[in-house]
Amino acid sequence: MSESSATLAAKPAAAIDLRTGSAADIPVVEALMAAAFDPRWGEAWTRNQCLGVLGLPGVWLTLAELDGAPAGFTLARSVVDEGELLLLATHPAARRRGVGTALLRATLDACRARDLATLHLEVRSNNDAVALYRAAGFEKVGERRSYYRGRDGSAFDAHTLRRAVVR
Image (cartoon, rainbow, N blue to C red; front, side, top):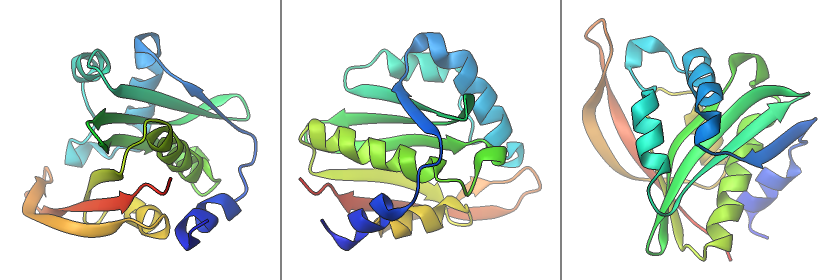
C-alpha cells in the first residue's frame, strides 16, 4: 500500500454509508450541490447537466450518507484507461468527518475495478478540497489562469491534478 493509500485508509469513516446512485438520485445531488457549492463561483451543475452526463457510458455516481442523512456525492467517468472526477461535494454539516475521504477512496476503488491507470480532476486553486486531494496523492499537472470568475469579478486559477491509480 502506498503512503497516499495508507493516508486515505487511516482516516476513520464514522457512520458513512456509500451507495451507487442513478438518475433517480438527482434531487439529492441538487440539494447537496446547493448546500456545498458557494454560488459565487457557479460550480454547481444544473439538473440537465447531471442527467446528461449520467446517461453517458463510463459515468458513475456515488452517494454518501452520514448517520442516515445525505452527506455528499461524487460524479466520475472513465474514458479508455483514464478516470476523471467531475464533481465531489460534501454537505457543510458533514465536513471534516471523513465523508470526502470516503468518497474519494470509493472513486479510486472504482477506478481500480475498471482497470484505469490514472484519475484526473480540476479544482479552483483556493478551494478547501485541494488539501484533501494533496493528502490523497494527487499532483498538479496543469493550470488554467483566471479560469474561475467570481460574481464580484475576482478570478482564480484552475488546477489540473492527477494521481496514478495503484492496482
